[in-house]
Amino acid sequence: MSEFYRQYLAVGVFVIAAFGMVGAMLGASRLIRPTRPQQDKYVTYESGSDPHGGFGQANVRYYIYALLFVIFDVEVMFIFPWAIDADGLGWYGLVEMTVFIGVLVVGLAYLWRKGLLKWA
Amino acid sequence: MMTLALDLGWGSTLAIKTLVIMLLIPLGALIFGWVFLFKMMAHMQSRLGPMDSGGFHGWFQLIGDGIKFMQKEDIFPEKADRRVMALAPFVVLLSTFLVFLVIPAGPRIVVEPLDTGVFYALAVSSLSVIGVLMAGWASANKYALMSALRAAGQLIAYEVPLVLAVVGVVIQAGTMNLQGIVVAQQEGAIFGWDGIGHPFVLTQIVGFALFMIAAQAELTQPPFDMPVAESELVGGYMVEYSGFRFLLFFLGEFGTAFAFSALAATLFLGGWALPGVHGGTADALGPVVVLVKVMLVAFLMFWARFTYPRMREDQLQSLAWKWLIPLALVNILVTGALKVAF
Image (cartoon, rainbow over all chains, first blue to last red; front, side):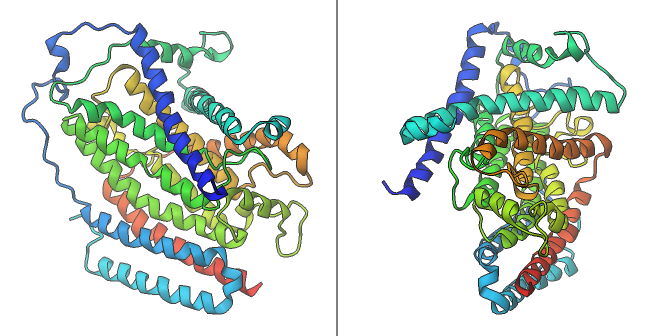
């Protein structure tokens, strides 16, 4: 197995270990905790009054930010390769990156101007 | 530690390192919870709390609380989605756990020095948002759902400045490998002067400030704690959890605080690097040096947490999009220009 895959195999081992750690702690708790079923315990907590409705409906006012997030997170993926070798790419790379970031900033400024960053 | 790494095969070394991390995360969370939450906040805000259990300053109190939580009944509400709700704390802790894979504590004390180190660490640290959404949604509780949506909106908004703040460090170090970044700080020089190496906090002070603010928001700590605002949402996405599952979210919170402090210490303060310390000595001193730096960063983080009042949800979003992200982009371009020019 190559070094590259071996390193990422360690990530897999860590995933299993994380689940194992939490599972072991919950297992230890299971051994010593009591179980006394009573119907009233299983009522949804709504500050003490009787709950009504099941899953609530919530107005997600900031869904537009999720779209913005995708744009900027993808942008970051393109900035990192340049950042690693900023020295080697020199002024050419820097100008290219300035243009790239500039386009995105214009996009952000447009959204700002359109009022999408305001609490709607 | 050194001889062990030499004699054992890859598998057994990884097993030992994994076990160390499995012990380190609850221990780190415990130390952070006790030192900062129980002692620092208590003394800063003049409300001492329990001072007797265990003797010195009530050091046993947090362990006792943990044991108490273990004995509590495990309750799922009737309307909840049991399987998703049970799985949520696993996902939250998984995201904390995975960060420690790449954080170095010495020239050779690191689980795996991935070449994509920084990128990987920030990517897995944002997995916790999935766990939070799972917890809030599966609880079938209106408060929990609202809290989870706030947390999701906040975590994605501050993920961007967090990653952009690190780009400056990557430009200066010329690598994403955390081990490489530490070496760059130890071997580096500030405009030709190499007396103390080159801790990036000195030349990336804007990046450091952005990283700390964004990390504060990622941890949902005050002044960015709207997802767990107890006066509005009675407690947040974990409101329907009981017993040890409830405690797991706090373990996750302090474990993540530990992870972010370790990341900040590695990226900006030079990790295990001490000026003039190399090789085996650096391996021996490394963990202590890292711990001191981590506690220093965490002190700043928790100081802000215990000092500032909560912001409003729209203020939080505009701070990220209108201030931090443009500032981070400017920081990247200025750093790039200086790197190319000098």
